Length: 114
Length: 246
Image 1 (cartoon, rainbow over the protein chains, first blue to last red):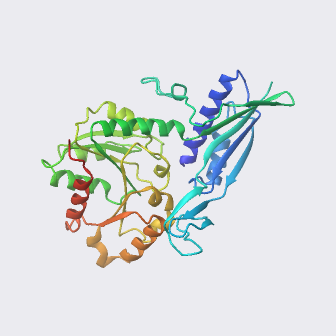
Image 2 (spheres, rainbow over the protein chains, first blue to last red):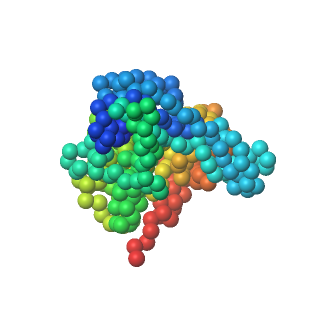
Image 3 (cartoon, rainbow over the protein chains, first blue to last red):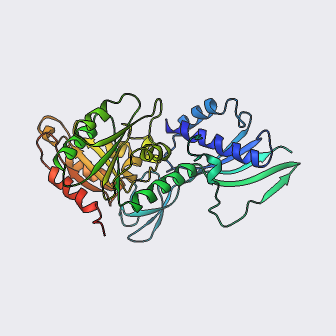
């Protein structure tokens, strides 16, 4: 359940941003969560419901962008979709690759009331 | 976050990206482009730990595994066998009890126990505080034994130079496929308890193949703390990673 720590970090960061803008609530929060980031979305949703209670995010609308895993083969330079870390290059079958997207775990934006 | 050292979220606010935060307004509402890594706080503290270790030529090794794979026994044996040839310190992470710290202490090694309570992993902040109280020796090895868990510790950089994942042959040989994040982020895989191979259905070659599919650069050492087989290879690996003091 590291998802709980992740949600708590989101609450901390959101709090900080809200304080900076003198906002007392957050209306919307947009997150980027890559498919290779190690987050289980069911656990994340469960942790979210529990951890935002009585925080600035309590009534915020949440938007999650799931970013697809993509890798570049280190042997033949083919770009391919990576669903699992053990996926090999579809062109040359090599396992040596560099992940170019899918590891994202960030707060993209917040909408604050005026 | 932390009242004792001030290493809370507000004291490390830095922008690593090349643009300023453009706030726009829509229907009377403010849209703030935050663009911040959620693990930023942990990663900054990990970088701080890493700098501390590098400055003192301390080799920090994060030991991760499921519970019962033999991490503590491996440490006990290592600390006993290499006593006098290398300097060590240990940070023990468990949810509860100081049992593991007591076992390490019995080998005569400096040890600090972190109890995470309900927490399922160590983070850089916990390690920072543990290290502050330890007065680590320069040119030494620091083992950080993480909470027994093959999932959660994978996401949290502690500032270590090496991450060693331990699996034992009493587990399934498909562990790397089941817990790919951990094998993907590790630099060394130790296959432990190989003296039990005649009694279990563990296929070492298969386990190695799976692990290398996930992480082709992963180094793998097979060993047994009971029979002593493979221990020399582990010790040679350790010695190869310790930088000779200038």
